[in-house]
Image 1 (cartoon, helix red, strand yellow):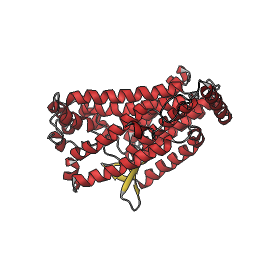
Image 2: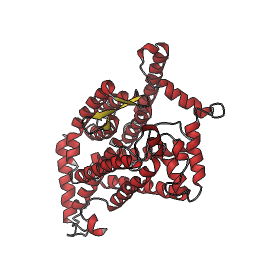
Image 3: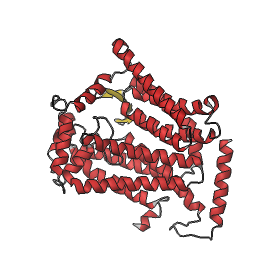
Image 4: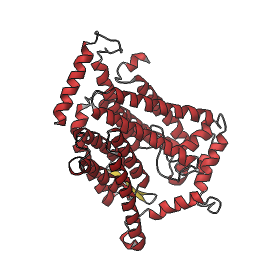
Length: 410
């Protein structure tokens, strides 16, 4: 293992966890797709091969990204932001609709789809991290500092919210966390939160009053999910998938039913994605669920550690945003499956069957590993992680990092 890990720079713990999860996803996806076979046809091997293609693409994307210098992420953040806007607008008009939601772009000739919001999430985190650095001395100024920081957040979240409220809400929350860490005045954040709630209520009011405008095409779906969750006794049929998910967790008990032996996964829509946690607990048990939770927490800890050790504020904010994003996605999936949260479309990072979500998660981790790799070089570590000097490289690396970002930030 050590022989192969020498080719993977950065934080080895993150690499090990990522590789374990990617490998395990092949086993779990093959086991969790009977419902998809029943609904769309095909065979489990067909979906396994499709997922394997995404896993290979995701791994090599992470590998290629982690070899780049983090300064390039600072440079391309604005470009990534504009690309994200273009993709979201294109999706608005030409999306491939699945389950009455238009979130996917069909990739020509290859038969694969890409969810534009997955790219937009990372693009916005890059943009907010950069703006927090550029406007760090102007955050008390509404016109010069605060609004230039908030406009990208409103634009991206506004384009996502129509067909994916949960993703827009999670992304908005992540940006607020980054701003709080970046010392944006709490009073201004409170005003933004209040204003955001007010705008949402106004849009909902217009949609209800003038339904012909169809401002929120999934409004009825959102309301039904909230009502069904709050009144479970009188909405048994509407809550069937949520109930089956909870029964699957109960059926898993301590050690699970075994790989491929879960029964309720065959009656849970999206058992391989949105209800991944339920299928996982049914077949692998609550003990494995605790271990899975620990893996995500260790991943979060390593990402935050890398961010806090960074010499650049941009790198720190970037790691915090990526870490919170991964934790939020995993937490929401678990909360939905346990009935604590209304049903929504958030899958398990690195584990659920998917394309763009899996690829962009690995790209985000590649960004973190790029930062970790630079830190290792600044500390003067060789290929095997051993120190090659007595501290001169660290001093030199800090100086170079400060100079590079000072040039970009000015």
